[in-house]
Image (cartoon, rainbow, N blue to C red; front, side):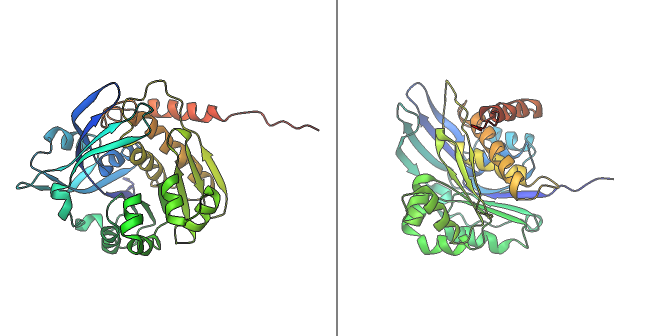
Length: 313
């Protein structure tokens, strides 16, 4: 008997990046939030991607997504337009970056339309796009079990009301610590997370780059996931989206409930996929992984905080 596995829909950007780091440069690097998310999540669940590209988007990237098992029937290809392009330069510390160019191209008029078979999917991740579009996508879904959402400081600044409206429908919000402070108006990260949860999300994940990530869950508990100390970070682009892919990918597995221990396990799988992502340009390092390699990295993360309980009495 064949068991139907739940599907995970991701809606976001698919892009071509020009990446400059202190040690290397790649002018044609396939990126975008939906791309990184889908590649990372594909090892854990069945992914359906919704996005838009132009005639210049490379055929090999679509083939790579298909080879990873990603359903790309929701990827719109506009033959008379060009793909969203971003050019950025990373500073020596590989944490800070400067945007040099942004060309929205076909992404500027992106109006996500979910294929009919996508709308009954049980899991949805609204990657970093305009909050109004995130709400439109949510309205197209029938009744998802779990909804995740990512945002950024731009939308917090210029579309705050729209963002707060869609947050009422969200089970998991992922954002970085700066964005959490901006959205909440609180500098203390614990107070910031509490204020953000009050806006609607049951669970808040605060990404902290090389310092790991924090989970503030619906029960009021806090969990800290470490980042893997890496000697050579090649390209940090897409690390946060890969984290979200690993996180949501685990939660979308059959029999996994988005509570307690499962959320903590999802945090580690998110960290695992992010650690692979930064080891190469684009999704190079996410491509062609196997379950054994991913599991070994998972065990490495587990060992980072494994210690014997001790008592002074």
